[in-house]
Length: 313
Ligand SMILES: Cc1cc2nc3c(=O)[nH]c(=O)nc-3n(C[C@H](O)[C@H](O)[C@H](O)COP(=O)(O)O)c2cc1C
Image 1 (cartoon, rainbow, N blue to C red):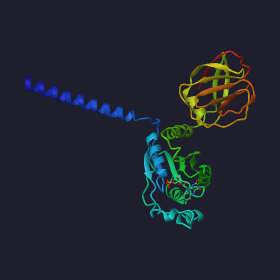
Image 2 (image 1 turned 60 degrees about the horizontal axis):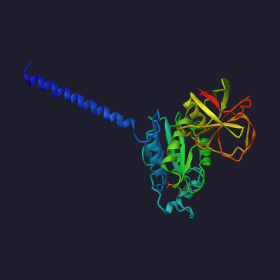
Image 3 (image 1 turned 180 degrees about the vertical axis):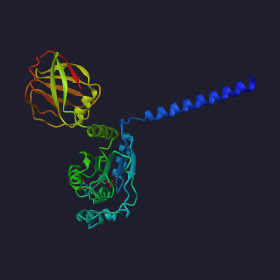
Image 4 (image 1 turned 90 degrees about the horizontal axis):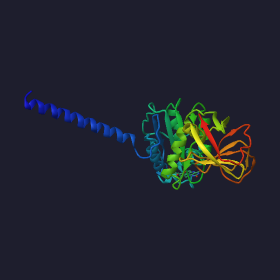
């Protein structure tokens, strides 16, 4: 082979090698986007925002859920005067008119998405009427809708109830309200994680082995229980506290929805704070906040020693 041909072959091999490396680098970049909650579906954030508050939240949700983002743009933009809710403004008139369906300017294609994060501001306790225009115009059947809102103080619950009533065939999760102070990166990331878990079918029970004896935890239908199931199998050395509970701090936090149970029943499995799993083996009253994971029937007194506990799927 003459020298020129050999050089040519070497150059071609080098080009192929370098382009292969670049492709790998590109691929690695897409796999390691900062702090995204890994989702295995096609999701989009669809939002309406009259003054920009919901837009800021929508953008963060899109970032953390690795979703596309589409704004719902009204055909007639809302001016400051239209939004002056202390007057007889356009927004108030629309909210008071059950037939009002303000037109949407842009065409929205949701056909490729199975998860829709749906964002809006609260107007007079519920969603703006343009959200109903959206539900009338496009077919959301078979998709999971995860609502979120911003508001001065009103919770999202009523608007979600009304959306479910408006079209009872749709799968609409509970959703979350944000304000300018609660839309931190952390709370958005937790919301996305919780929503992704809540989309899945609930697992009703999980096996737990305590001191080599098998029990069943009847699980709550919440993101905390779903996450624990995902983390199993787990083998924990649980410490005793106050002769009534065994606890263990996991290295990773779970989604939380804390409440004050007031009373603990023997067999309750709870999450304290964000990462402390607690199994109660005595009943008593409490003033602490917990997120309930489930309940073990027939749990005996576990004694005051530290114990080995295996959680299995
Ligand atoms: C017509 C109108 C009605 C509103 N009604 C409520 C309400 O019932 N409860 C509440 O907490 N905030 C209410 N707000 C405040 C908005 O929900 C809040 O400012 C929201 O974050 C605005 O979102 P945006 O900037 O994305 O449009 C209302 C605002 C307007 C313009």
